[in-house]
Image (cartoon, rainbow over all chains, first blue to last red; front, side, top):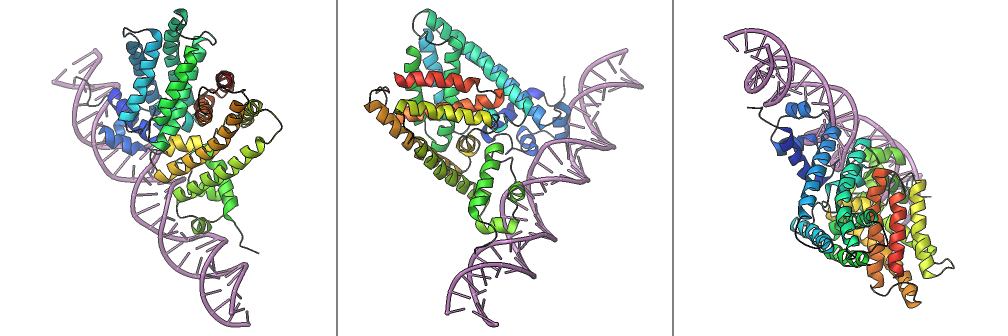
Length: 192
Length: 192
DNA sequence: CTAAATTTGTACCGATTGGTCTAATTGGTC
DNA sequence: GACCAATTAGACCAATCGGTACAAATTTAG
């Protein structure tokens, strides 16, 4: 049978709330209200707000990695996959009305130098995605589509951190202009 | 004679506190304590926390633009100036023990989509810097040192937002590794 | 069916949040 | 020296913060 609430649903709610508002703007009460659970259940599942946020980041890291892996299973060349991937991420942000960006980017910037556990969780999620992205880039290098001037991992990191940079611009301009511009320049870069 | 406190000093204190902690983590009381002023004086000078932060960003935008302009007056080629500039920014962040990054990046990510006034101030500061950086890049393009494949403004934006992206990585890894890697790749990119 | 363990729900805690209010003081101007 | 506006100072405000306490309800184990 199980009990009334479960961790995964609460984490899912926390993901949306934290991604949109950041860490310090959001109070526990808002998460409780949004998830429709009483405080006792929250602190039964999680030690603290920080512990909760760590688990939100971890779950998001895992599920997003899985999503990336599936995305890359489409029938396209590695370079086309990379392009479709980042184009898709830009589209998602447009559909979201440029409201949130990436949870890991937001947490890294806001809390990365203040809370060790959040920094660790953010870093681990990021690196797990880079692994997958670098894997596809490597294939593109082997087939000659993508430059060999840098390692696959270096290119993956360059791309993904580059996109993170555009999130700051996206949020204040409320447009995809900078992301599209970044996309064109970055794709030219990796083609060599 | 003037009165006991003045706005500029309070803004300067606010800059350091906000850059390190972000917007929502910091309370007015902490700023008061750090600046050594009573609450009455704060609300005599500033309408609200948001208004205060806008002015912090604006003052930082102005003073930093001036600093950039002076930096670029050194006797070096445009490309060498750009390299020295970003190398210097990386050095500053290392000396700061990777604690803060850039105020405008932090505010853009944390508040850019929530508070219109902070978004506007952040965007204006950013663009005023881009103007100066693009000016030097243009000179480098004219002398053939820097690629003409993209406009000077596009290149300036690509560089500066790219660096912003590395701040997220810097904060969680507490190292300059990603910034150095970004530097090498980006400089290769603008050389064409 | 009972007992133990877990989860649920809510009242409550001290501390802090951004902000207001008012009185005392200061400074510049006539 | 008088007057007025600006500044200084800090007590105070309701609301919210993250977190605790504990009883009631529910599930699981035996």
